[in-house]
Length: 432
RNA sequence: GUGGGUAUAGCUCAGUAGGUAGAGCACUGGAUUGUGGCUCCAGGUGUCGCGGGUUCAAAUCCCGUUACUCACCCCA
Image (spheres, rainbow, N blue to C red):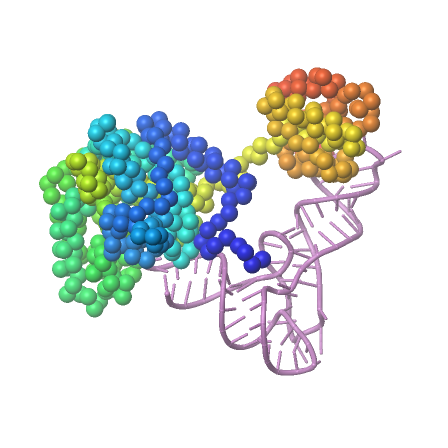
């Protein structure tokens, strides 16, 4: 096999695709109840959009983007959804039409990273963006919605970390303060953190290296340097979360790798360890400066999050009740196959999932297939049935069968489907 | 980008005193001349990742290479 999917990108075959569809349906329904409407933006954006909003010195922009030149333009396959949505929001002057806007998106994102468990080069996110509300009530609502969301998707063991890094000026000041704090101890830091000192000193705070942790523990905390308004915002967030009974954990060391965040940051992590280092199922935060940066007539506060679909699917139950066809046709001759094709076509008009076995195999083999597909019914068509204009309708779920005239097949199928199948234990007894 | 592990049937994997390959699952047939799930019997499938080297002989030893995977970095 010489041609295969490119590194870090996966095929999703029908069996898995069904799980994806269920997840997406749950997501759409749930966020829809909060008023979120879908936005679909292009996969390609001007490279400049991500450089400016995510930040030139971030890992995502400096080494993970799929960018290329086309004529005079530098284009990039989107590495995340927030910047694209914000661009569309500004481009269409949505702020001039309505004061508050709630958008969601679902789709593939691309980052040229080394693949690992829960991390791929093409991965998929479902996310929400809320524009026009400074919070903190909307922040709390969104975080509460995230908890509800992952619970609805079947995630059990998780914890939500929240933090505030202050508004723009506060954040810049804190960053400088951290640099001044760590600089004298440069030699004691890990190699990675020595590099972070120049690129993103906030990152040193959540380093896993024991050398860094010791120093980080004594570093000034963000909460101590928050401006009064920022502190008030964060207090308000916590009060609302408490009132909503959303379980959360204040984590002053929570920082995120994208430059656009202001004030509220949050991350929802799985606590079972099954995703290794990639334990964040979902992450987000407030980005009050982005809309203004993009040239909007006036700044608009915003907050959003993105959920990693692969990661959710990785940690939620794989085994779900299989749904099979309503009726599986097992014809025993060429003539019977022709008849079966026609009968199945009619039955589908009534909305039933039907399949015809045209392989010309034994009845046993065809029934085995029907069972393998978890089909509720099987329609046997042999010489007898053809001669009498009937089919033998076998109820695989109830171990019963009957002869029905082809003219009454639809009614018989509907009647059978309305009857409950035998429970598993009854089947086991029956088998004995 | 750095470091580790793995690569044998469609899938999950066995297979070292080097002697050109096995099991389970799945699939097909039969026991039941037209009846599923359990059971029993039978059957097919492999460039042993790729390239080179050592050897009478390599899935097995050596070198290289590619892919996958895990960890770090970072993030969903």
